[in-house]
Length: 205
Image (cartoon, rainbow, N blue to C red; front, side, top):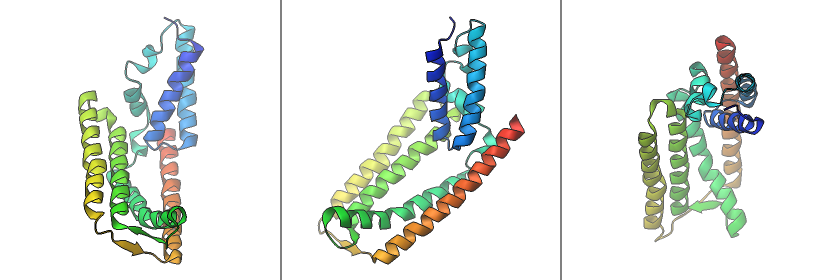
């Protein structure tokens, strides 16, 4: 059955979303999406369905289409995760001081809970990037295990540390300085990643 224009747009949008989860920069996603749209429109002109191009698993197709050389290595992923983890305490200290009308700082149980959420999200992101190596059942089991381990574990530790509540005060200048340095580091890493992706796409063209 010939693919409709709406089906083509939905398929391209789904592939773009998956490339975004893989860390593909926007300009590279645009190029990959344009190529995919052209292939789908060509298939539609020959009265072929979307599945003729992408198969039955769009996520697996999108993962395969993204050049492996451009993807984050384990070292770069851990580095970006550490940058995010370092950003959590000063960010939490500044936010809670605004919304709770208290000195800049955080309670230890709040920090543990937020770190649990951050690590759980990072685990899910890592699974998305390795989707091609996992069958659907294994992917779901590992995802659920990550949510239980990090989010539920963070909640449990947070509850245990709530009493007695321990407050850690942070100098505002230090908090802003840490945020500035980590954001700058993330910008540098993002720029290098975009350059690596462009080189990979050009080499695979």
